[in-house]
Image 1 (tube, rainbow, N blue to C red):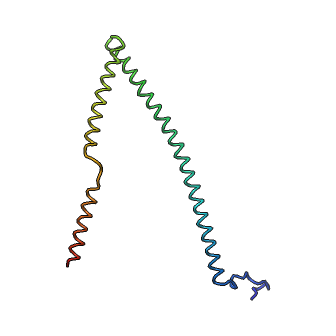
Image 2 (image 1 turned 60 degrees about the vertical axis):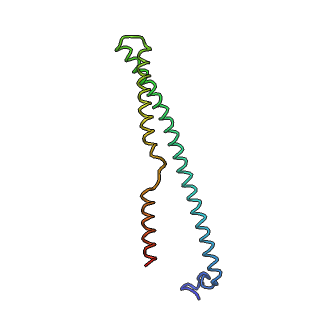
Image 3 (image 1 turned 120 degrees about the vertical axis):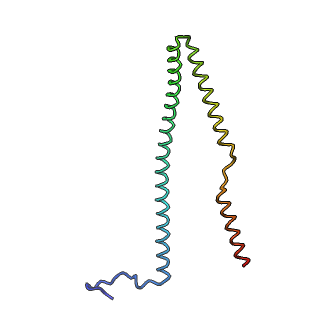
Length: 140
């Protein structure tokens, strides 16, 4: 069969069912491989971005730590000036303040953690009720 200009169309109609299935299978396999490569590339890009973000976060954490240390030094010197005493008294007051904050934070953490491990109590109760309903329906 020829088209209008005397050229035969591609022999797609002459292919057997087996050849068509094989061609579809090959193209599907190629598509899957390309999708996997795309997913790998996307994951690699996201990991790089997350890595950069983690590094910047660590640097920010170091700066925050330095701000806290220098802030506490400043507070100690300020207390020294206000009380007009030796420098060690300002540092002692800051140290006692930090100890009190640490004790309060420790007690709050203890209270929060004393509830035990997290268990899905509502989900367990719902599953128990569902099982009971199913057992009741089975007995009817």
